[in-house]
Length: 65
Image (cartoon, rainbow, N blue to C red; front, top):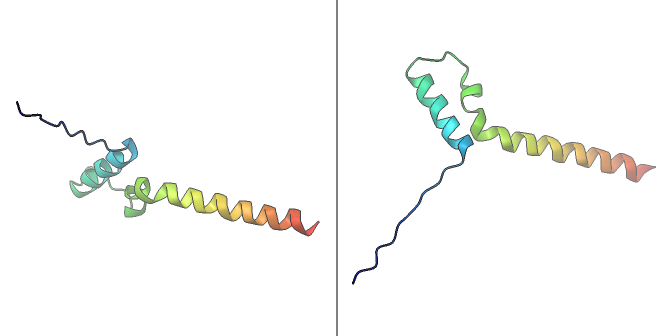
């Protein structure tokens, strides 16, 4: 008896959205800037960095009091 393994690959919805935007841009369906087309890939990191900078500024202000 052979045991078969079923492999399931799951992609986050934001990744699929990003791939869809790239395909639409390359097929000339949308005329967006590449910054907006690739935003699903780098947008989360950008938001995280902004929040970290704001938290650092807030911590510095509270420490100086």
